[in-house]
Image 1: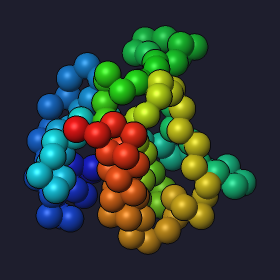
Image 2 (image 1 turned 90 degrees about the vertical axis):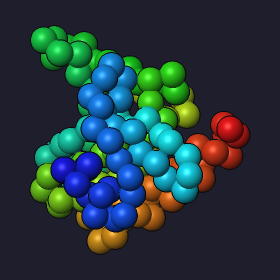
Image 3 (image 1 turned 180 degrees about the horizontal axis):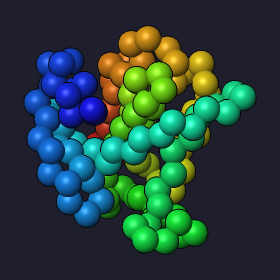
Amino acid sequence: MVCAYLSRMGHHVIHVDTIGFDLVLVYEGQSYRVQVKSSKSVETNSCQWHSITPGNVANKRWFGPRDADLIACYHSVFDTVVFVPVLEPLCQVRLPLNQVRAAGIGEASLAAAVKKLCRNNPR
């Protein structure tokens, strides 16, 4: 879904499905490793995405800057994608419900995530 979404937005994206990331995205002439997470969780004020180690629901897998550059948080209930830069190790992403539901959040969050990533990690 995220690969199709990015392609519809006019971006070059390749599905690779390797350890640490699922896609390679070319955005404004730079390539970014993208880890995709999906969720259907809806709480009162937020939505969340977890990284679970395969075969062991009790263990959460941590993703850091060595694994991926961006996390694409796909929400199946709202059919939206929100991009988050990977600046430090994390195993969970929690976003405000109004942000996840916002129409057009994908392109805006992608631009903001890349800008924040580049500001913290100049190439």
